[in-house]
Image (cartoon, rainbow, N blue to C red; front, side, top):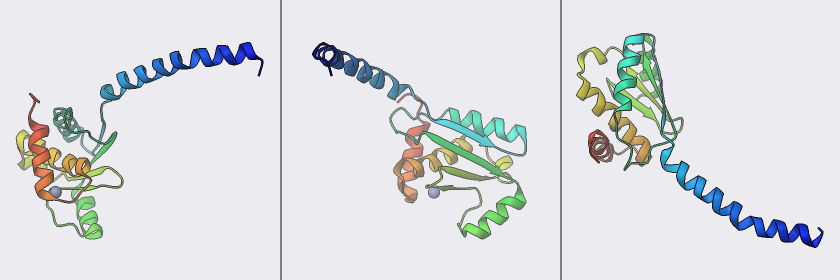
Length: 147
Ligand SMILES: [Zn+2]
């Protein structure tokens, strides 16, 4: 490499690095979790999406992408038989970042119940663990809008 080119390149690097670092630091806290909700009924999809968006992830770094699938009664029964999880409302696949909700349970839940349920499932993703106590503790923190 000609000397002047190398000098120019070397001279630029700290500036470029500083710029990229600044850009990175600026971008990291600004990237929100992408929440995707799938459902056979638009009303349930809207309700769950709106409530999921009210969770406060500022102090609890959430996974980048969270998919919430609201299953029809038949699909819910099938999935429970396959996974053998012991729940009537929801469970989360920690590897795929997917939460499955029982559509039959939602009409009996008020908005607080659903927020807590979503916060609890998000809690499993945040701790990347199956602990119910930890998931509940994180859910409480996610539901606090002031933090
Ligand atoms: Zn749980």
